[in-house]
Image (tube, rainbow, N blue to C red; front, side, top):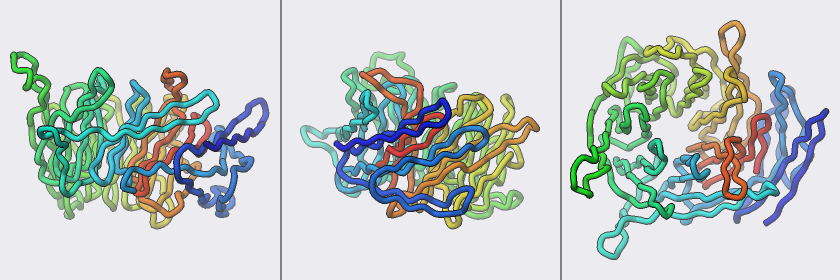
Amino acid sequence: MISSSKALQYGTNTFKFQTTITVQLRHRLSRSRDAERGKAHSVAGPAMSPPWKTLLGLAVVLHRPVMTLLTLPGETGVTSLYALADINGLMAGSKRGAVYCVDRQEEATGTSNLQLRELPLPLEGDDPVRTPNPYPIYCMTSNDSQNTLFCGGGDRYVTVWVRQDDGNWRQKQRLGPHTGWVKDVWYDSHNHVLNSIGCNCIETWKQRENNDNDDNQQGVWKHWKHCSIESSVSEAATLSSDLLCLCPAVAVGFFLAGGVDGRIHLWNSELGQPVASVAAHVGRVNAMILAPKCRLFFSGSHDGTIKCWLMDADANTLPRTAAATLSVEEDARVTAMTCIKDGSTNAVRVFFGTQNGLIGLALAKKAATGGVDFVLQRTVHLEGGPTIHALAVLSCTHDGKASNTPTTLAVGHSLGLTNLQINQRCFNVN
Protein backbone atom coordinates (compact mmCIF):
# COMPACT_ATOMS: atom_id res chain seq x y z
CA MET A 1 0.00 0.00 0.00
CA ILE A 2 1.25 3.46 -0.91
CA SER A 3 -0.12 6.50 0.82
CA SER A 4 0.59 10.20 0.45
CA SER A 5 -1.18 13.28 1.71
CA LYS A 6 -1.22 17.02 0.99
CA ALA A 7 -2.76 19.86 2.93
CA LEU A 8 -3.84 23.30 1.72
CA GLN A 9 -4.13 26.17 4.21
CA TYR A 10 -6.66 28.85 3.33
CA GLY A 11 -7.74 31.36 5.96
CA THR A 12 -8.84 29.43 9.02
CA ASN A 13 -9.73 26.28 7.05
CA THR A 14 -7.33 23.44 6.39
CA PHE A 15 -8.21 20.96 3.66
CA LYS A 16 -6.36 17.64 3.79
CA PHE A 17 -6.13 15.32 0.82
CA GLN A 18 -5.29 11.64 0.89
CA THR A 19 -4.16 9.68 -2.13
CA THR A 20 -4.16 5.95 -1.42
CA ILE A 21 -3.30 3.03 -3.66
CA THR A 22 -4.98 -0.11 -2.35
CA VAL A 23 -5.45 -2.22 -5.47
CA GLN A 24 -3.41 -3.55 -8.35
CA LEU A 25 -3.72 -0.94 -11.08
CA ARG A 26 -3.29 2.83 -11.25
CA HIS A 27 -5.06 5.28 -13.51
CA ARG A 28 -3.71 8.69 -14.35
CA LEU A 29 -6.15 11.54 -14.50
CA SER A 30 -6.29 14.29 -17.12
CA ARG A 31 -7.96 17.56 -16.24
CA SER A 32 -10.63 19.00 -18.50
CA ARG A 33 -10.75 22.63 -19.45
CA ASP A 34 -10.44 25.09 -16.59
CA ALA A 35 -13.82 26.73 -16.03
CA GLU A 36 -12.36 30.25 -15.96
CA ARG A 37 -9.33 30.22 -18.27
CA GLY A 38 -10.32 27.57 -20.81
CA LYS A 39 -7.00 25.74 -20.40
CA ALA A 40 -6.57 21.98 -20.26
CA HIS A 41 -4.41 20.24 -17.68
CA SER A 42 -2.89 16.79 -17.80
CA VAL A 43 -1.80 14.90 -14.73
CA ALA A 44 1.11 12.52 -14.42
CA GLY A 45 3.20 11.53 -11.45
CA PRO A 46 2.58 12.20 -7.75
CA ALA A 47 -0.05 14.45 -6.26
CA MET A 48 0.75 18.17 -6.06
CA SER A 49 -0.55 20.98 -3.90
CA PRO A 50 -3.92 21.90 -5.42
CA PRO A 51 -5.24 25.31 -6.44
CA TRP A 52 -8.66 26.40 -5.17
CA LYS A 53 -11.67 28.20 -6.51
CA THR A 54 -14.78 29.77 -5.04
CA LEU A 55 -18.08 29.15 -6.84
CA LEU A 56 -21.37 30.44 -5.38
CA GLY A 57 -19.51 31.18 -2.15
CA LEU A 58 -18.30 27.59 -1.66
CA ALA A 59 -14.66 26.55 -1.75
CA VAL A 60 -14.07 23.87 -4.38
CA VAL A 61 -10.65 22.28 -4.21
CA LEU A 62 -9.04 20.97 -7.38
CA HIS A 63 -6.69 18.11 -6.63
CA ARG A 64 -4.03 16.45 -8.79
CA PRO A 65 -4.13 12.79 -7.80
CA VAL A 66 -3.18 9.33 -9.01
CA MET A 67 -6.33 7.28 -9.61
CA THR A 68 -6.81 3.71 -8.43
CA LEU A 69 -8.73 1.16 -10.47
CA LEU A 70 -10.24 -2.01 -9.04
CA THR A 71 -10.59 -4.64 -11.75
CA LEU A 72 -13.10 -7.46 -11.45
CA PRO A 73 -12.15 -11.07 -12.17
CA GLY A 74 -12.13 -11.74 -15.90
CA GLU A 75 -11.29 -8.07 -16.60
CA THR A 76 -14.97 -7.23 -17.00
CA GLY A 77 -16.56 -3.83 -16.54
CA VAL A 78 -18.94 -2.67 -13.79
CA THR A 79 -22.39 -1.94 -15.21
CA SER A 80 -24.35 -1.16 -12.01
CA LEU A 81 -23.79 -0.07 -8.40
CA TYR A 82 -25.92 0.17 -5.28
CA ALA A 83 -24.87 1.53 -1.86
CA LEU A 84 -26.24 -0.25 1.22
CA ALA A 85 -26.45 2.49 3.84
CA ASP A 86 -27.11 0.23 6.83
CA ILE A 87 -23.74 -1.54 6.50
CA ASN A 88 -21.97 1.12 4.41
CA GLY A 89 -21.40 -1.54 1.78
CA LEU A 90 -21.38 -1.40 -1.99
CA MET A 91 -22.94 -3.89 -4.39
CA ALA A 92 -21.60 -4.07 -7.95
CA GLY A 93 -23.00 -5.79 -11.03
CA SER A 94 -20.69 -6.79 -13.86
CA LYS A 95 -20.95 -6.93 -17.62
CA ARG A 96 -20.68 -10.72 -17.40
CA GLY A 97 -23.62 -11.17 -15.08
CA ALA A 98 -21.88 -11.55 -11.72
CA VAL A 99 -22.90 -9.66 -8.57
CA TYR A 100 -20.19 -8.57 -6.12
CA CYS A 101 -20.16 -7.21 -2.59
CA VAL A 102 -17.41 -4.61 -2.25
CA ASP A 103 -16.52 -4.39 1.45
CA ARG A 104 -14.86 -1.10 2.40
CA GLN A 105 -13.26 -0.14 5.69
CA GLU A 106 -11.77 3.32 6.20
CA GLU A 107 -8.84 3.54 8.57
CA ALA A 108 -8.15 6.48 10.87
CA THR A 109 -5.45 7.60 8.42
CA GLY A 110 -8.06 8.04 5.68
CA THR A 111 -7.01 5.00 3.68
CA SER A 112 -9.61 2.56 2.35
CA ASN A 113 -9.30 -1.19 2.38
CA LEU A 114 -11.37 -2.90 -0.32
CA GLN A 115 -12.40 -6.54 -0.44
CA LEU A 116 -14.31 -8.07 -3.33
CA ARG A 117 -16.72 -11.00 -2.80
CA GLU A 118 -18.74 -12.55 -5.60
CA LEU A 119 -22.24 -13.57 -4.56
CA PRO A 120 -22.66 -17.34 -4.83
CA LEU A 121 -24.58 -18.90 -7.69
CA PRO A 122 -27.65 -21.04 -6.90
CA LEU A 123 -27.04 -24.77 -6.66
CA GLU A 124 -28.52 -27.59 -8.67
CA GLY A 125 -27.63 -30.56 -6.53
CA ASP A 126 -24.05 -29.90 -5.48
CA ASP A 127 -23.08 -27.89 -8.56
CA PRO A 128 -23.57 -24.13 -9.16
CA VAL A 129 -25.94 -23.19 -11.98
CA ARG A 130 -23.99 -21.13 -14.49
CA THR A 131 -25.47 -19.20 -17.41
CA PRO A 132 -23.77 -20.30 -20.65
CA ASN A 133 -23.95 -16.75 -22.10
CA PRO A 134 -23.89 -14.34 -19.14
CA TYR A 135 -25.70 -11.02 -19.52
CA PRO A 136 -24.89 -7.62 -17.95
CA ILE A 137 -26.44 -6.57 -14.65
CA TYR A 138 -27.87 -3.20 -15.68
CA CYS A 139 -29.48 -2.03 -12.45
CA MET A 140 -29.88 -2.60 -8.71
CA THR A 141 -32.13 -1.49 -5.88
CA SER A 142 -33.24 -2.79 -2.47
CA ASN A 143 -36.25 -2.81 -0.16
CA ASP A 144 -36.68 -0.66 2.95
CA SER A 145 -34.74 -2.93 5.30
CA GLN A 146 -32.04 -3.42 2.66
CA ASN A 147 -32.06 -7.17 3.24
CA THR A 148 -33.35 -7.84 -0.28
CA LEU A 149 -31.45 -6.85 -3.42
CA PHE A 150 -33.12 -6.67 -6.85
CA CYS A 151 -30.82 -6.95 -9.89
CA GLY A 152 -32.13 -6.36 -13.42
CA GLY A 153 -30.20 -7.86 -16.31
CA GLY A 154 -29.84 -8.41 -20.01
CA ASP A 155 -31.34 -11.88 -19.60
CA ARG A 156 -34.76 -10.12 -19.19
CA TYR A 157 -35.09 -11.16 -15.55
CA VAL A 158 -34.89 -9.47 -12.15
CA THR A 159 -32.84 -11.60 -9.77
CA VAL A 160 -33.88 -11.39 -6.11
CA TRP A 161 -31.12 -11.80 -3.52
CA VAL A 162 -31.82 -12.12 0.22
CA ARG A 163 -29.27 -11.28 2.91
CA GLN A 164 -28.92 -13.99 5.55
CA ASP A 165 -28.36 -13.51 9.28
CA ASP A 166 -24.64 -14.18 8.80
CA GLY A 167 -24.38 -11.32 6.28
CA ASN A 168 -24.07 -13.55 3.21
CA TRP A 169 -26.43 -13.27 0.26
CA ARG A 170 -28.54 -16.05 -1.29
CA GLN A 171 -30.35 -15.96 -4.63
CA LYS A 172 -34.02 -16.61 -3.90
CA GLN A 173 -36.06 -15.85 -7.01
CA ARG A 174 -36.03 -14.64 -10.62
CA LEU A 175 -38.83 -12.36 -11.86
CA GLY A 176 -39.74 -12.49 -15.54
CA PRO A 177 -39.22 -12.85 -18.35
CA HIS A 178 -39.70 -9.21 -19.34
CA THR A 179 -40.30 -8.07 -22.92
CA GLY A 180 -36.69 -6.89 -23.15
CA TRP A 181 -33.58 -6.09 -21.15
CA VAL A 182 -34.33 -4.95 -17.61
CA LYS A 183 -32.66 -1.54 -17.77
CA ASP A 184 -33.83 -0.25 -14.39
CA VAL A 185 -35.73 -1.22 -11.22
CA TRP A 186 -37.28 0.89 -8.46
CA TYR A 187 -38.78 -0.18 -5.13
CA ASP A 188 -41.79 1.84 -3.95
CA SER A 189 -41.49 1.94 -0.16
CA HIS A 190 -44.94 3.54 0.17
CA ASN A 191 -46.90 0.84 -1.67
CA HIS A 192 -44.28 -1.89 -1.06
CA VAL A 193 -44.09 -2.90 -4.70
CA LEU A 194 -41.24 -3.34 -7.18
CA ASN A 195 -41.30 -1.69 -10.61
CA SER A 196 -39.10 -2.94 -13.45
CA ILE A 197 -38.53 -1.93 -17.08
CA GLY A 198 -38.80 -4.22 -20.08
CA CYS A 199 -38.67 -2.39 -23.44
CA ASN A 200 -41.62 0.07 -23.41
CA CYS A 201 -43.33 -1.74 -20.54
CA ILE A 202 -43.23 -1.39 -16.77
CA GLU A 203 -43.96 -4.51 -14.76
CA THR A 204 -45.10 -4.19 -11.15
CA TRP A 205 -44.41 -6.93 -8.60
CA LYS A 206 -45.93 -7.47 -5.18
CA GLN A 207 -44.72 -9.67 -2.35
CA ARG A 208 -46.95 -12.53 -1.29
CA GLU A 209 -48.57 -12.12 2.11
CA ASN A 210 -47.18 -14.39 4.85
CA ASN A 211 -50.60 -15.73 5.82
CA ASP A 212 -50.22 -19.41 5.02
CA ASN A 213 -48.17 -22.30 6.30
CA ASP A 214 -46.17 -22.82 3.11
CA ASP A 215 -42.65 -21.65 4.00
CA ASN A 216 -41.58 -21.87 0.35
CA GLN A 217 -44.20 -19.28 -0.66
CA GLN A 218 -43.61 -16.80 2.15
CA GLY A 219 -42.01 -13.61 0.89
CA VAL A 220 -42.25 -14.70 -2.76
CA TRP A 221 -42.73 -11.91 -5.32
CA LYS A 222 -45.66 -12.22 -7.73
CA HIS A 223 -46.49 -10.26 -10.88
CA TRP A 224 -49.16 -7.65 -10.16
CA LYS A 225 -49.57 -5.15 -13.03
CA HIS A 226 -48.38 -4.54 -16.57
CA CYS A 227 -48.49 -1.26 -18.48
CA SER A 228 -46.84 0.04 -21.65
CA ILE A 229 -45.92 3.43 -23.13
CA GLU A 230 -46.69 4.14 -26.79
CA SER A 231 -45.27 6.68 -29.20
CA SER A 232 -46.88 10.11 -29.35
CA VAL A 233 -47.08 12.31 -32.45
CA SER A 234 -48.41 15.25 -30.42
CA GLU A 235 -45.30 15.14 -28.21
CA ALA A 236 -43.01 14.68 -31.24
CA ALA A 237 -42.05 11.25 -29.88
CA THR A 238 -42.37 9.00 -32.91
CA LEU A 239 -39.24 6.92 -32.33
CA SER A 240 -38.96 3.93 -30.02
CA SER A 241 -40.86 4.42 -26.78
CA ASP A 242 -38.60 1.99 -24.89
CA LEU A 243 -37.86 3.04 -21.31
CA LEU A 244 -34.33 3.27 -19.88
CA CYS A 245 -34.38 4.67 -16.33
CA LEU A 246 -36.57 5.13 -13.24
CA CYS A 247 -36.43 7.35 -10.16
CA PRO A 248 -38.88 8.37 -7.41
CA ALA A 249 -40.94 11.53 -7.80
CA VAL A 250 -41.56 14.19 -5.15
CA ALA A 251 -45.16 13.09 -4.56
CA VAL A 252 -45.45 9.91 -2.48
CA GLY A 253 -46.42 6.85 -4.51
CA PHE A 254 -45.29 8.34 -7.83
CA PHE A 255 -42.14 7.75 -9.85
CA LEU A 256 -40.51 8.97 -13.07
CA ALA A 257 -39.56 6.98 -16.17
CA GLY A 258 -37.28 8.25 -18.94
CA GLY A 259 -36.94 6.73 -22.38
CA VAL A 260 -35.32 6.46 -25.79
CA ASP A 261 -37.61 9.08 -27.36
CA GLY A 262 -36.49 11.79 -24.91
CA ARG A 263 -39.73 11.87 -22.94
CA ILE A 264 -40.14 11.68 -19.16
CA HIS A 265 -43.30 10.07 -17.77
CA LEU A 266 -44.84 10.53 -14.32
CA TRP A 267 -46.14 7.18 -13.09
CA ASN A 268 -48.71 6.34 -10.42
CA SER A 269 -47.22 3.29 -8.71
CA GLU A 270 -50.46 2.14 -7.07
CA LEU A 271 -52.48 2.35 -10.28
CA GLY A 272 -49.60 1.02 -12.34
CA GLN A 273 -50.03 3.56 -15.12
CA PRO A 274 -48.64 6.91 -16.36
CA VAL A 275 -50.49 10.12 -15.52
CA ALA A 276 -48.37 12.74 -17.32
CA SER A 277 -45.57 13.01 -19.90
CA VAL A 278 -43.22 15.73 -21.11
CA ALA A 279 -40.88 15.93 -24.11
CA ALA A 280 -37.74 16.62 -22.07
CA HIS A 281 -34.74 16.00 -24.37
CA VAL A 282 -33.90 15.67 -28.05
CA GLY A 283 -31.89 12.54 -27.21
CA ARG A 284 -32.58 9.47 -25.11
CA VAL A 285 -32.93 9.94 -21.34
CA ASN A 286 -30.22 7.72 -19.84
CA ALA A 287 -30.33 8.71 -16.16
CA MET A 288 -32.48 10.54 -13.62
CA ILE A 289 -31.97 11.40 -9.96
CA LEU A 290 -34.19 13.05 -7.33
CA ALA A 291 -33.20 15.49 -4.59
CA PRO A 292 -36.44 15.27 -2.54
CA LYS A 293 -35.77 17.96 0.07
CA CYS A 294 -35.02 20.49 -2.68
CA ARG A 295 -37.99 19.24 -4.74
CA LEU A 296 -35.62 18.97 -7.71
CA PHE A 297 -35.01 16.13 -10.09
CA PHE A 298 -32.37 15.91 -12.80
CA SER A 299 -32.39 14.16 -16.17
CA GLY A 300 -29.26 13.33 -18.17
CA SER A 301 -29.42 12.65 -21.88
CA HIS A 302 -27.66 11.52 -25.04
CA ASP A 303 -28.04 15.11 -26.22
CA GLY A 304 -25.20 16.14 -23.87
CA THR A 305 -27.33 18.07 -21.39
CA ILE A 306 -28.52 17.70 -17.81
CA LYS A 307 -31.82 19.35 -17.06
CA CYS A 308 -32.98 20.44 -13.63
CA TRP A 309 -36.72 20.27 -12.97
CA LEU A 310 -38.61 21.92 -10.10
CA MET A 311 -41.71 20.08 -8.85
CA ASP A 312 -44.47 21.03 -6.44
CA ALA A 313 -44.51 18.94 -3.26
CA ASP A 314 -48.03 17.56 -3.76
CA ALA A 315 -48.27 17.77 -7.53
CA ASN A 316 -49.03 14.73 -9.66
CA THR A 317 -48.19 16.60 -12.86
CA LEU A 318 -44.89 17.35 -14.59
CA PRO A 319 -43.49 20.84 -15.30
CA ARG A 320 -43.58 21.59 -19.03
CA THR A 321 -40.14 23.22 -19.09
CA ALA A 322 -36.94 22.67 -17.12
CA ALA A 323 -35.89 25.19 -14.48
CA ALA A 324 -32.27 25.09 -15.74
CA THR A 325 -30.17 23.29 -18.33
CA LEU A 326 -26.48 22.41 -18.08
CA SER A 327 -24.52 21.58 -21.25
CA VAL A 328 -21.69 19.08 -20.84
CA GLU A 329 -18.61 18.82 -23.06
CA GLU A 330 -19.05 18.62 -26.82
CA ASP A 331 -19.81 15.07 -28.03
CA ALA A 332 -20.36 13.88 -24.44
CA ARG A 333 -23.44 11.83 -23.62
CA VAL A 334 -24.65 11.74 -20.02
CA THR A 335 -24.93 8.09 -18.97
CA ALA A 336 -25.06 8.09 -15.13
CA MET A 337 -25.90 10.46 -12.26
CA THR A 338 -26.17 10.70 -8.49
CA CYS A 339 -26.38 13.57 -6.02
CA ILE A 340 -25.79 14.67 -2.43
CA LYS A 341 -27.31 17.46 -0.37
CA ASP A 342 -25.09 20.50 0.00
CA GLY A 343 -25.87 21.21 3.65
CA SER A 344 -28.90 23.29 2.70
CA THR A 345 -32.45 22.49 1.63
CA ASN A 346 -31.91 24.85 -1.30
CA ALA A 347 -28.77 23.33 -2.83
CA VAL A 348 -27.62 19.96 -4.13
CA ARG A 349 -24.43 18.69 -5.75
CA VAL A 350 -24.88 16.52 -8.82
CA PHE A 351 -22.25 14.03 -9.97
CA PHE A 352 -22.51 12.74 -13.52
CA GLY A 353 -20.62 10.49 -15.92
CA THR A 354 -20.49 10.19 -19.70
CA GLN A 355 -19.74 7.64 -22.41
CA ASN A 356 -16.21 9.00 -22.92
CA GLY A 357 -14.86 8.80 -19.36
CA LEU A 358 -15.87 12.26 -18.17
CA ILE A 359 -16.89 12.65 -14.51
CA GLY A 360 -18.42 15.97 -13.56
CA LEU A 361 -19.57 17.87 -10.48
CA ALA A 362 -22.30 20.52 -10.71
CA LEU A 363 -24.10 22.62 -8.11
CA ALA A 364 -27.83 23.35 -8.33
CA LYS A 365 -29.09 26.07 -6.01
CA LYS A 366 -32.53 27.58 -5.74
CA ALA A 367 -32.49 31.30 -6.44
CA ALA A 368 -34.44 33.90 -4.49
CA THR A 369 -36.34 34.74 -7.67
CA GLY A 370 -37.81 31.24 -7.74
CA GLY A 371 -35.55 29.81 -10.43
CA VAL A 372 -32.52 27.53 -10.13
CA ASP A 373 -28.84 28.35 -10.64
CA PHE A 374 -27.16 25.30 -12.16
CA VAL A 375 -23.37 25.62 -12.43
CA LEU A 376 -20.70 23.19 -13.61
CA GLN A 377 -17.92 23.20 -11.00
CA ARG A 378 -15.41 20.61 -12.08
CA THR A 379 -14.81 17.84 -14.62
CA VAL A 380 -12.16 15.15 -14.80
CA HIS A 381 -11.46 12.44 -17.37
CA LEU A 382 -10.59 8.81 -16.76
CA GLU A 383 -7.70 7.74 -18.94
CA GLY A 384 -8.78 5.49 -21.77
CA GLY A 385 -12.23 7.14 -21.91
CA PRO A 386 -14.31 4.27 -20.48
CA THR A 387 -18.08 4.47 -20.53
CA ILE A 388 -19.41 5.47 -17.10
CA HIS A 389 -22.27 3.09 -16.29
CA ALA A 390 -23.07 3.84 -12.63
CA LEU A 391 -22.29 6.19 -9.72
CA ALA A 392 -22.86 5.66 -5.99
CA VAL A 393 -22.06 7.78 -2.93
CA LEU A 394 -20.67 6.09 0.18
CA SER A 395 -20.29 7.41 3.71
CA CYS A 396 -17.25 7.04 5.92
CA THR A 397 -16.73 4.14 8.30
CA HIS A 398 -14.37 4.01 11.27
CA ASP A 399 -14.04 0.94 13.49
CA GLY A 400 -17.16 -0.57 11.92
CA LYS A 401 -19.33 2.48 12.66
CA ALA A 402 -21.06 4.21 9.75
CA SER A 403 -21.47 7.97 9.37
CA ASN A 404 -23.90 10.08 7.36
CA THR A 405 -21.05 12.14 5.90
CA PRO A 406 -20.44 11.25 2.22
CA THR A 407 -16.75 10.59 1.59
CA THR A 408 -16.47 8.42 -1.52
CA LEU A 409 -17.93 8.47 -5.01
CA ALA A 410 -17.81 4.99 -6.52
CA VAL A 411 -17.63 5.00 -10.33
CA GLY A 412 -18.58 1.85 -12.24
CA HIS A 413 -17.34 1.86 -15.83
CA SER A 414 -16.29 -0.36 -18.71
CA LEU A 415 -12.79 -0.91 -17.22
CA GLY A 416 -13.82 -1.68 -13.63
CA LEU A 417 -14.44 0.35 -10.47
CA THR A 418 -12.81 3.67 -9.52
CA ASN A 419 -13.13 5.54 -6.19
CA LEU A 420 -13.12 9.33 -5.79
CA GLN A 421 -12.84 11.02 -2.40
CA ILE A 422 -15.49 13.67 -1.75
CA ASN A 423 -17.04 15.71 1.01
CA GLN A 424 -19.57 18.50 1.24
CA ARG A 425 -17.17 21.15 -0.07
CA CYS A 426 -14.43 19.22 -1.84
CA PHE A 427 -14.16 16.89 -4.79
CA ASN A 428 -10.90 14.95 -4.56
CA VAL A 429 -9.77 11.64 -5.99
CA ASN A 430 -8.79 8.69 -3.83
